[in-house]
Image 1 (cartoon, one colour):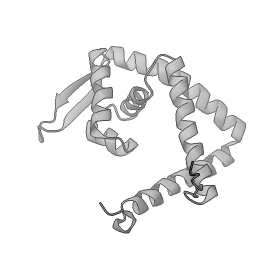
Image 2 (tube, rainbow, N blue to C red):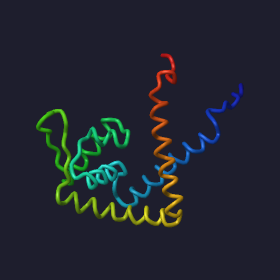
Image 3 (cartoon, rainbow, N blue to C red):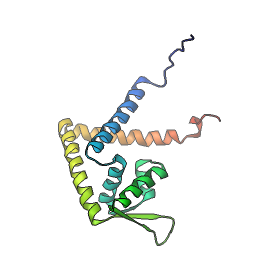
Image 4 (cartoon, rainbow, N blue to C red):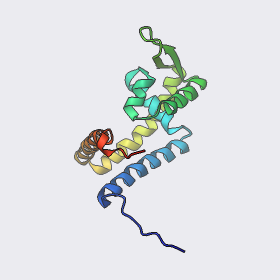
Length: 157
């Protein structure tokens, strides 16, 4: 039997940071499941409560999600009667999303619970430390987006 040598994938600090981000996403997903809501649907509800009206394209851009993933979440929320989908007047390809009254109530119920968790986290960390973390994550994402779109970093087919 031939043993393969372990090859380091990346800088250990970067690997730990990436793992922490994925773990945080997993923890949030598990919380959503325990509260009987799909995590991606919850994120759609959050964005709609912040903006009142938005498009699937805006959701994709905000969360960097594939078109089909967003479409599945939107369809599920629509089937449940929580949002309505209509075509934009100017660009018929664009789908405008808006919560129904039932959707607003449902979103508020779920988002109020989430806000309690987020407030507790912020309070335990401290407002300043949380603000620094938030700024660092936004900077990390901005630079990561730039580097991930850099053609120099694409492998050959």
